[in-house]
Amino acid sequence: MNKILTISSKDILHHVKINCQIPSLLEAIATRQIIMNEALEAGIEVIPEEIQQAADSLRLANQLLKAEDTWEWLEKYHLSLDDFEEVAQINLISAKLATHLFGEKVEQFFYENQLNYAGAVTYEVILDDEGLALELFYALQEGEINFQEIARQYIHNPELRRAGGYQGIKRRHDFRPEIAAAVFATNPPQLLKPIITAKGVHLIWVEEIIKPQLDEQLRGTILGDLFTAWLKQKLEQYEIVAQLDINNNYQTEMLKPQSSQAA
Image (cartoon, rainbow, N blue to C red; front, side):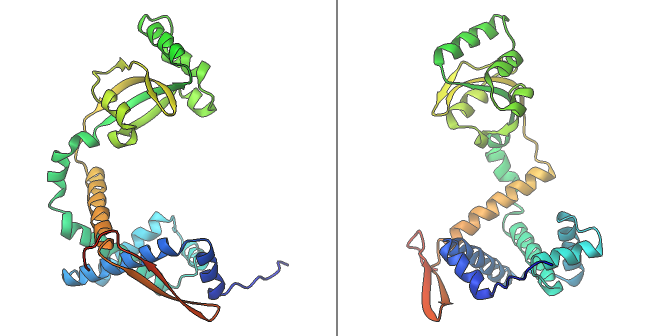
């Protein structure tokens, strides 16, 4: 029989405090309060049917396909059914607020920034020696060796080596700036001349540049990015004060705004 170890709410709060997690916790709580206040001011409402749909989506996202799965999940996270409904409601209100604020701005933002959403299919080997990188670069150009052979010889990570240095589909922000500039200026398929960064000497084969399309997935990504940036600006307008009572000592934790703008 397992031994029982009792942990109180006071223990939890103390653990959060001594592990320096209070600032991130305050920011998360403040963010939720901002969302609820802004939604109230905007007149955003939700009906029971919408909350039920949001709850179903939450169950699906957490793979809670059976009733017992849901009960086990609630027990694991110490949530009641009311708590679960509240989580679903907050998610729904956040989504509605994001659409209210930026739903009609997504398309314009996409066309103004579509280069940032282009994708590149690349293969990469990072070397320590610039001279070796140049030697391999010219050997590739002359057809004396192929990129997969270089990957098998010079990549140490087994999975990456087996994939021939394949990096998947990356967007501009996924690359270092100096590499992004070179990659998205290519006319694929094309081998880039070695690029030196702090990580080493990059030998990169650009297989394809994928033009961005504003599908539902990308629309959701842009909407989320705009909403996140807006929330960050909102947070900077506030001085967040938390009143903590640990070990019977009244203490105040404060997050100061990063700008002097008043709330």
